[in-house]
Amino acid sequence: MTKTRIPARNQFKLNSSKGKNFRAAAREQKARDVPLWADEDVLSPAISQYIDAIVDPFEAPPCSLPNQPPLMTRPAKYWTKGTFSSSPVAGAGGVGFVIMNPGSGISNNTPSVLTNSAALALPQIDITTAGAFTNYFSNADYPAADFGAAAKQGRVVAAGLRIRNITPNLSRGGQCIGLASPAHETLSGLTVTNLDAFQESARHGGKDLSSWIEVTWRPVDTDDYDFMITFPAANQPNGATLGFIVVAPSGSPQTYEFEAYGIYELQGQLVTSKTFSVADSKGFDAVSNSLVAAPKLHKPHVRDEKMRGAAKLAANFVVKHMSTHGGPAYPPPKQEHKNILTQVLDMAPSFLNAVGTFF
Image 1 (cartoon, one colour):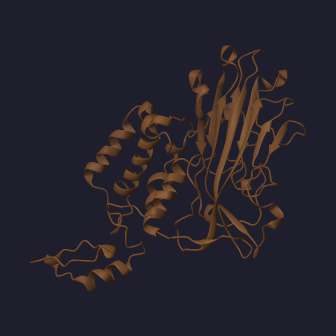
Image 2: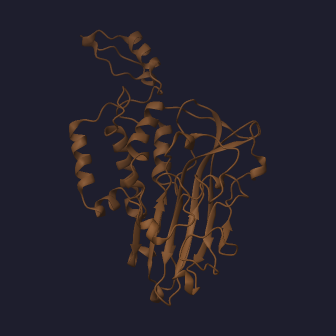
Image 3: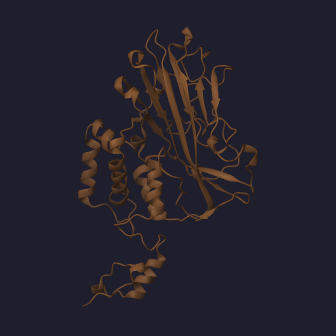
């Protein structure tokens, strides 16, 4: 029996032996909550953009959250850059810190990054003692006063913080410990020992310090997908959830460069240049199940420019073939794909650092 031919703009995979025809296929496609171009071989553009943002918020372009319902929004991107040095005060034990508040970066006059100052006197992330810390602000479009129930609201899509040691080579040394808070609790008040106690933290030293060491934000609750009109303070829950503590060698203060990037989305009556966001709930669930919900893939890691493309291809493969969501657009994973995933997860961390660097 000859298969029914479908126009190129409405491609369907038909099984004529089961009696399917064009109208039946059209009804089936209409019932799906994914666009016509999504099938088991192709991710929707909205999902591909979201994967790019989650995997590499530093380089990815602005994008919208592809969840339901579709909205009129404006995706945007902010960043904050600067330097900080380990404290020279004896009581600080050579410690310095940098923390990021992803939500506050949506406003350009609310501190999005906080670092220690030269007066830090405690070996911990201290953002409550006057003079112990320095505030940095993002280059976002609007101040906090512009946000309101009808005027403007914003939400975080993806975010990341990275540091690298820029101390002269002959004096460079020490270690850094990074963490993305797994429950979005503030990092305020934590010490090196506190950070080390988290399974999701990671410690780097030696030649790694000369490269960018990155940590990325991920949603951990449905509230993280909500639009905000006020932004949490750094020392509150959902505040400063990304950060690093650096520890300098005795008698050799260290200087670090930092960059904080946030991809966010704006909506509201007074937000200009809005576009219609595309919703792909099956793809969004697949990303959430495969990438967002994998804590080990959000551990601090060394950036490897040569592996960026490989990591993004791996991310697309994971979403398409290893998601447990299933459905016409994203079928259940095949056994061989599960075996590949098992092998990858069982391999050495060096392999994950190479292929999964930007997860």
